[in-house]
Amino acid sequence: MKAKKKDFVEIDFTARTEDGRVFDTTKKEVAKEENLPETEYKPLHICIGEGQLLKGLDKALDGKELGKEYEITINPEEAFGRRDPKLVRIIPLKVFHEKEVNPYPGLSVAIDNTIATVRAVSGGRVITDFNHPLAGRKIIYKIVLRRKLENEGEKIAVILKIHLKTDKFSVKGKEIILEERADDSLLSGAEKKINELIGDFTLKNKGNGGVKEDLGKSSEKKKV
Image (cartoon, rainbow, N blue to C red; front, side, top):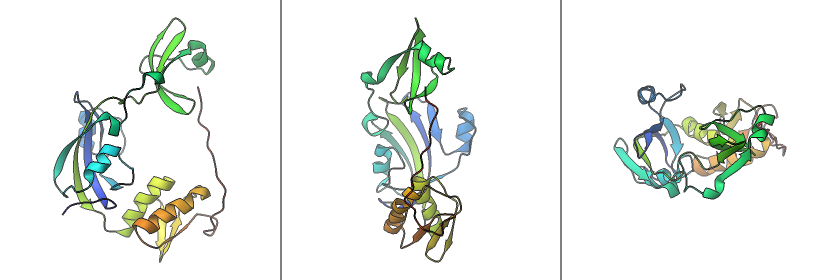
């Protein structure tokens, strides 16, 4: 059986750069072998074509057989992009010190709501790279589509994670009730996508009886 665009599937994968460095995986044993950060490693639930994966990988999954392992190489343009020299900036060291940050090569910092990497520190200047750390590199995935998701609850969870960053909900008939309050301004988009891909449901926020108030919320990150 082959998977196609708009199918909900469960996948296992390991991603590496051309030099063999593994930077992401769904497999706990691989994460341990590669000394990746301690977190929860488990198969990922996605909807093919909905932008949950790198563009090149998302496109490549259309038409792949369930249960078969594939090795897929993605060029930089459809992975993390080409490196742009214009995204390498020199920032005075005092800017970092004013924010109580002591920069060193390899440090990741948030500047103007963008993650950057410190490349060098010398003479009161900090060379800071706003390119993605994997920009300009081919990415190689070993991936298996384990199964199609047939359960409506599993499918709903995928959409809610994409649009509302939550998977806590209950279903009563054709009503989906969030167990954690989400940004009201995002509800209509999530409900529209659920109706498009899964079925005719009404999405209700916690604490307002399902009334979608037009109230946006914002959060601020600490800036350098």
